[in-house]
Length: 304
Ligand code: NAD
Ligand code: UD1
Image (cartoon, rainbow, N blue to C red; front, side):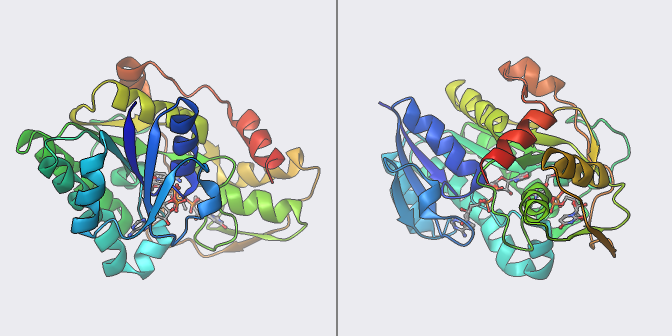
């Protein structure tokens, strides 16, 4: 029976992954510092170790017992990384190198890790394929690009099988709506349904490629099941774009509610156009994102 270490397994995406792993009978150990994660997100069968992904001795100990690692722990908010530059760097880049190093010391355990569409910055050459120029606008994106560079080193120099996934904007049940650092869909669904106003940063014409969390999990599993990979990176996206203003209106329509919108200054480091090309991932893993946007929104709304 396979045993996986899942960093960030009490968070949004990680907890859905842990559900899928335990449902197929695998053993799961989660490492999470509970900064945004919650114990109740994770399946009861999972062992939860509370600690820091940049704690090398701890990660090494947990890696030795596992067959491989899904590395999802990060400060996932672009805005929070802007405000907490050095501490988020420690988690987002040092934490990732710590995971690769532990995998190396354990004899080359495979690592599947979360990168981000934020590595592209505001590249207008959409839809973006993996060869598109990377020029992050934010500390968050810069650290995710650093993870990818170290992923190449982990494989090329140290023989650690690994794959990085550039998730575009992931949404679905269990995404925490309550923090100002939360994802836009979680915030808007929560507030519009409660009859509360929402804030759009900028004019609302910025676009995102929203991908449902279940589709993200299928990519993570496929990459690990294929042996871990050779340090390559892949988009996880749909190839379809939605503006933030359309998003607000669609959530209002599906909730039978009004969107009470206030417009505010754009966020520093915010990307205008983020739209990915899923062709490379589809060819490699054959698990295309199949949940259309409105169905995903309905599943998200039903879970609230
Ligand atoms: P999340 O905040 O729900 O999950 C992150 C988890 O990591 C949380 O449980 C948190 O407590 C934990 N964590 C944070 N710092 C830690 C540390 N120092 N040590 C141990 N655990 C720590 O966010 P998410 O949306 O589930 O994101 C998961 C991963 O996917 C992250 O790497 C994020 O950058 C990446 N990602 C997310 C999206 C998205 O749209 N949600 C898109 C692209 C990439
Ligand atoms: C998100 C993810 C990040 C990921 C990236 C990949 C979160 C918190 N962040 O960043 O981990 O790497 O996608 O593309 O999930 N907005 C509003 N009002 C709000 C909240 C947000 O107008 O109340 C706007 C933002 O300014 C932005 C858009 O909505 O233009 C999306 O914001 P957000 O959900 O925070 O995600 P990203 O910054 O795209």
